[in-house]
Length: 43
Ligand SMILES: Cc1cc2nc3c(=O)[nH]c(=O)nc-3n(C[C@H](O)[C@H](O)[C@H](O)COP(=O)(O)OP(=O)(O)OC[C@H]3O[C@@H](n4cnc5c(N)ncnc54)[C@H](O)[C@@H]3O)c2cc1C
Image (cartoon, rainbow, N blue to C red; front, side, top):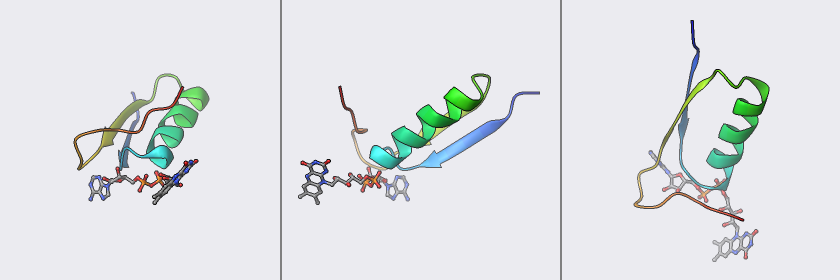
């Protein structure tokens, strides 16, 4: 059964948390909820 992770906030912290969680468990179903119009991005 796939586990779910819901992250509140699509800033630097939210994106970093999502990436690290997927590295640890690629099967994890990750959802980021962002109240603004844009999520953080970085090269
Ligand atoms: C003026 C300024 C300039 C800066 N310049 C730099 C720089 O040049 N280089 C650098 O490395 N750092 C810089 N920083 C710091 C950097 O912006 C922060 O360290 C970083 O954005 C923190 O990331 P965070 O994910 O913790 O928080 P945030 O970036 O604040 O992200 C939180 C997110 O959560 C969302 N959110 C909040 N409540 C909810 C809710 N209830 N539901 C859904 N979404 C929600 C917000 O919309 C936001 O997108 C700067 C900061 C400021 C204020």
